[in-house]
Structure formats: C-alpha cells, structure tokens
Amino acid sequence: MGAAGAASKKPPAIEAVPLSHAVSQRFTRKREDCFSAVQNGKYAAYAVFDGHSGRQTALSLSQDMCHALLSSDRPLDRAAVTSTFWRFDAEIGMGMRTLAPAAAVTAAVTAAVTTAASAASTGDAPAAATAALVAADVARKPEAAAPAPVRAAATADGTDGEAGDGGGHKSQEADPAHMEELNELVLDGATATVLLIEQGEDSMKCMLAWCGDSTAVVFGIPKGEILHTTTDHNPDLEAEIKMAETIAQVRSMMHELRAKQAHGAPATEHELEEKERGGERPPLWKEIASCLAELRGHTPAEEEIDLVLRALCRESLIERLLPDGAEVRRNFLQRRRIPQQDSKAPLVIATLDDYLSPYYYDLQMTRSICDWRGPSLVLPHPQFLEFEVPSGSRQRVVIASDGLWDVIQHSTAAYCACSKRKCEQAADLLAQIAQGEYMTRGVSSSGPTAHPVGDDVTVMVVDLNPSLMPWPASSACCTLL
Image 1 (tube, rainbow, N blue to C red):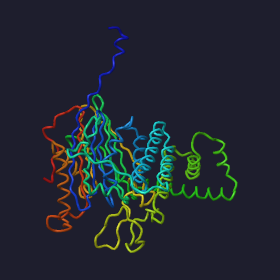
Image 2 (image 1 turned 180 degrees about the horizontal axis):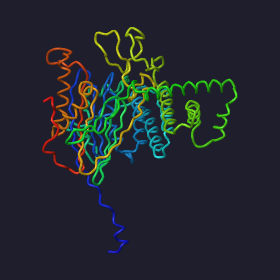
Image 3 (image 1 turned 120 degrees about the vertical axis):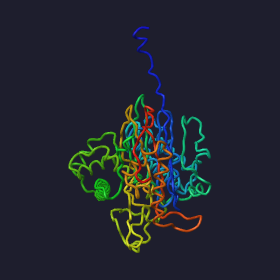
C-alpha cells in the first residue's frame, strides 16, 4: 500500500471504558436530594442536586440536565455548559411557575432553547438571555391557564427507557405524588454539581461544573491524597460578593442612564463613542460594557459583560413572570437577622445556626438554579474545574450534598473513600458515618417514621480508571472503622 493509501486510513474508534459509580442516600423528612448518572459512549455525566425549600427543581434537574449536557456537540465546552445551566433555570421557571398552557410554554421554551443553542455555537451568550425574555412574553399570553407537564421519571429498573441513549441513565425516581407536586408553582431551588467525562485513547478529560455548595472532591488512589476540590459558593467569598455588588451597581447605573435619556439629558462623550462604534452587539450589551468600563477604569472582559447581561435579563424575566404583588428579596448580603423582622419575606435558602439562638443564618449560598423568589443575584452561573486522569493512574471522585460535608472532613472522606475497592462500599460507608453523626444529635420523632435531625445525605462515588488498573493490594485505611 502506498503512502497516500496509508494516510487515508481513519484512526480506530475509541473504545469507551465502562465507568464504575455508586450512590448512597440517607433522608430526613425533607427528601430534597436528587442525583443523575448517564454514560453515552465515550462521554459521561454524574451529578448531585440538593434542593432547598422543596425538591421540585432538584428532581427536574435529575431527570434532564445530564442528558442535555451530553447531547451538546461540545459536552466539555465551558460556554455550552454555562448556557445549559442558565437554560434550565429559565425552563424550570417558565415551565412550572407560569399559569400558561402546556403548548404555549413548550413553544416558548423550544424557541428559547433553539436560540440559545444557536447562540452557544457562535459564542453569543447575550442572544441566549434575550431569547428567554422573548419566550417569556409568549408564555404570558392572556389565554394562559395551566402549567406545563414534566417529563416522566426513570423506569423502575433505573434506566431511562428511551432509544438511542447509547448508555445507561440512572436518576432519582419520581412517584406519582411528586409528579403531582411538579405541576404546581415551584418556590424552591437547587444546587447542581456535575462531573463531565470524555474518554480518550489512554486518558480521561474531566470537568467539574457547579453552582452552590454540593462539594466534589477528587482523590488519588491508592494514597488517598486530595487532588482537587470545588469551592462552595457562599457570601463568605470575597469574589462572590464582588460579583453581586458589580451587577447591582450596573443595574443602578443603567436606571440612572434611562432616567437621563427620558429627560433629554445630553449623552456623555463615552456614550457617544459607543454609539459611533456600532457593531453586532445589541445595545443593551454595549450599555453594560460602558457601565463596567466606568466602574473598572478599563475595558471589561466579554465574559463579565455576558454574565451581567444574563443576570439583568433573568431579573427582568422573573419580574415579568411572577404573580403581581409577589414578594421578592433583592438583598442577600445580610447574614443574620431576627426571625420576627420582615416575617413575610420568603426564606428560600435558610438553615438553622443554633436551635436555641434568636438568630439564624439567612442565605447560605450565592449561586443555585431557580430560586426565583429568593434574591435575584443568586445566579445559576457555574464555576469550572478541569483536570485529566492520565494513563496508568487511578482517581476517585466523591460528589455529595452538604449533608455529608457538614459532618465529615475532606481528609476523613479521603481515607474512607479509598479504603474500599467497590464504589458501592465507599458510598455506603460515607453515608453511614454521616447518618450516625446525625443520629447522635437526636431524632425528629420516634417509632418507625423516625428521621435523623440534620440534613439529607447523598453520596456519589465515581471511579476514574482509564487503564483498567487492578485495585492495589493495600490502600488507605479508614480510621473510623
């Protein structure tokens, strides 16, 4: 065979390595944790969703988000993943919280999704946000009268049952009572932590995308060293507060700009330059860029402009769709307050700090999906962490709701996760330790319906073993056994 013939040979198809994972859960009365696991050829997605003030959002995400992420032409592309997070926030809000017929909402969401997908392919994030506003107008037609239905849950055997998946799908099952809940107005939200995997010939590319405080930790095997960990999104982080304050400042500056334009005040030199510059960007995008430039003293990055545009469009969308007179909190910077004050304000994201204290923490996170009755600056904007598992190495990822991390240190989780050969054993061990810790604090009731005081616990363990290496003869030993 000649050189030309040899060069025309196609590279051999990559044979996907079967991935091992397991989930273990312990519930309180809330039952707000959900999960999803999907493998489609060389791609896979594993996720944990922790609901607050309800489980509707978390359950909806567990049914559809991983499928949506893997259906993209670029499953591990940051722009595509970001668009999916924001799209699900808009879809859940429009599809479940508006009094619109199913057909109208479906058409509106389809239009938004189509535009968002087209925008993502060209990197035009503002177009996706604008599409959500257009879809909202469609959904709010006068004839609207009923909520949109939600897709059925996984089948009893844990698989999705749809042809062409190319892999298994496991997610939280939805019983009829929960499906009935999903057809009512949703007042809750959820965290989302997703592990995306792309298998190569002898390695694995991995991406963690998350918003909220369902932490993921990557451990090395056999030593159990902590290689990577996500950062919880809460008001203690200076970067999170700065992001929220920037959006609020831009909002205020744009309101002043609108008032000035309404009274016929002359435009500033900077504004005139922006008008003369023209370009393909929508006027709103350029106005935001101008405000950010004034705040920063230099030209802002396009990613920051896109984020502010998405946030302001989302806020406008929420105000349009929520019923008239609905109470919406804008400020989340106040960490502690007396319960008797502002008692009508919805506490969408709240946990007790001390049962005997007259004070309690208000907001616990700065990013989550939905939460349309919460502060509008709690955004569904994901943060990313990318890493690679090279040939000849093995790693293990633990993704868990805060019910685990509130009572277990990362170092303890490392020993426990890496001391068990099977993912099922590791997940069960971690969940059992958390449950035991909560049980020492007491139970919420007695008898067969007793539940531990504390939080729901969901632990997902995923093995990353591209070379199919055998389990080491000796590995980390859990000191709690």
